[in-house]
Amino acid sequence: MSAARKPVIVALSGGVDSAVAALCLQRAGYSVEALHMTNWDDADEHCTAAADFADAQQVAGDLGIPLHHVNFAREYREQVFADFLSEYRAGRTPNPDVACNRHIKFGAFLHQAQRLGADYIATGHYARVVHKGGQGFLYKAADADKDQTYFLHSVRSEALSRTLFPLGEIQKSEVRAMAQEYGLANHAKADSTGICFIGERPFREFLAQYVVAEPGPILTLDGQTIGKHSGLPYYTLGQRHGLNIGGQASREQAAWFVAGRDPDRNALIVVQGHDHPALLSSALDVGELHWINGPPDDLTATGTVKLHTRLRHRQAEVACELSRSGNDATLRLKFLIPQRAATPGQYAVFYCGDECLGGGVILATRCGD
Image 1: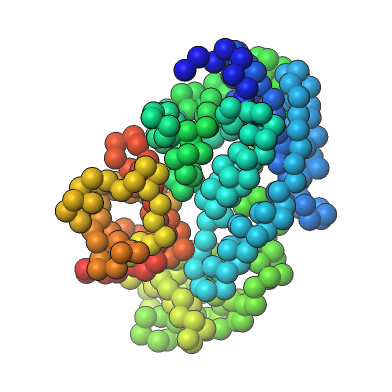
Image 2: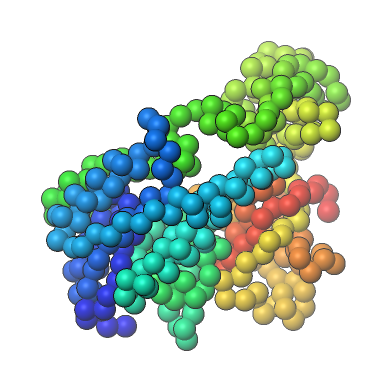
């Protein structure tokens, strides 16, 4: 594809990655403009929206490109944040970054960019895309440590076909060096971490504003009460820190980990040992499936396919077998090696080599299936 003056709008966040993405596109010959999104606009000391917009303005000035600004706070609350709260209230642990990419960055943002006359959008994500036959195919980034395909797996093929990932072939260290060499004001700006609307505040402090969480007992598998939790939504499977039950029971030197949440008893279930059998799953039920370019041929033809999966960002991929479970809306995922702390509400993302095929929501974990 020739880049000669093709109009592209970059999602300019104010961070170094999107700034260098815009720089790369300029150097490649595209006609580049930028669009800054405000997705969360609470006026408190934890919201960085104003500072991020100021950084985006500085970068746009440094690069000499027009900067547009749009507020998607309403869309974000309706399409991302409402689901985030619903999942926590249902006892699951959601990942709002996945929904934000699908609905906001590669949904609302794409539509706005097209209204502004763009042929393509671009972001500072670490991923690669191949355009073929009007479809977009998603591949892992060259920088394996920064690869973000886990968060991008639910983006529609049609959106990917109109997307460029300028950092897909670049190492993070090169990005920083390019920004400094060009003289971008944000070349040393720290990467954003965590969930955007929470910022640097404690997670419990934020969630308590929206979700009722009643304290209750911390129980061992045999029902022994060994402590008190602050509210089930504040804990996730595999969690070690923040339980305040060290030195309990007989094995005083073994750490305690969250193995389950029992809403009927409002009880947090814990076990001792990082690899306790109660923390391991041999199979999962996966639903709300999204295949970027349709399900694999083997799954369609035989009902079973062998792939690799990630259960969380930066986790090593593991071999798995996917099969129909008797319910068209769900699949059964079986592991060759049981996996630790698979968490309902999170995502199982599927890969064939370097290609990300899609994924689904973990509905339930199973042992011995």
